[in-house]
Amino acid sequence: MRIAALYDIHGNLPALDAAIAAARADGVDRIVVGGDVFPGPLSIEALERLLDLDIPCQFIRGNGDRAVLETWQGKEPAGIPAQVRPTLRWHAGQLDAAHANLMEQWPPTLPVDIQGFGKVLFVHATPRNDTDIVTRRTAIDGLRAHFSAVDADLIVCGHTHMQFDLRVDDKRIVNAGSVGMPFGEPAAHWLLLSHEITLRRTPYNLEAAAALIRESSYPDAEEFAVRYVLAPPSEEEMLNLYSR
Image (cartoon, rainbow, N blue to C red; front, side):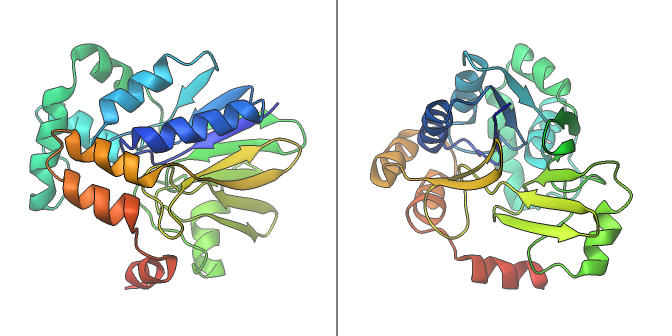
């Protein structure tokens, strides 16, 4: 079985299209969407693209998806800064009942038995919740606190938008990176599971993507186009930020 893990798309439709095309060329049998289709400039369009695929596609819910869904339900998502709430309300205004009902069914984790890897668990951030921060700098004791009790040989995660491949005791923890908002090299970052684990970075037309995003009605379209498509922050910058 060949699985593409596409995480943290954040409404970047051109990046998603590039990752899907690359996954198709690799002959994947299944796509796992690891959370955070939302928020982002073309999130509805990205969701529709995934739902229309002829490749089987499974979803787990990320913290961004959860916050948008809770806003649609009339709730105030916990831990969300005030400046982000207008963007969440914009997304909630775009959702229809069919999309919301579908998102309500997305589980927080997805266990899959994969030959050659054993028990694989797909999570958004960590098995404990969808907001914990784990990076390649996380100390071994921190990794054990997050992952040691999990009944899995391989854990695939995302959330921090930076790829890594770590081992803690008898477990392997791999971050698929972000398709739509990667930190570091501008490209669509994703993970291929086949006979081995491959961290992929698929180039796409950044200028065309930025132009399409600017044409959207997304409240933060210009910032997204510049900061997260054309010139994303470096891994070093974000690692230092997360460390603080």
